[in-house]
Image (cartoon, rainbow, N blue to C red):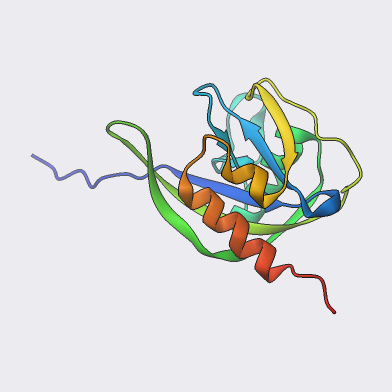
Length: 149
């Protein structure tokens, strides 16, 4: 019998701040709030779409598709790489980037992938149903992105 190594799904996520340093969050089908993002695309699917050439490119594409926002992804958020088990037996490697929002005044739209989108302060986000590690990533990026002065 041939050994099959375990395969880990990878999800790239982004901490994107809108006006007032409020973080963009999306409500998923499980009723949890999450950072925007998703999986890397390998390409070659229907229509011959090109695959993502980097995790950052994948995140930029995902945020654009999910919310209409244009961002530049990077750097990695301190402590933002972790393993999440959204449902029993399904583990996902989460890799979180800080994002520079290129369209901060644009209201985020909701794609078919989510129920709602919202902009929240760190304090408001702490009161939402979401994994603790997302809150840690939000706090880390807010510290990193402190305005000078």
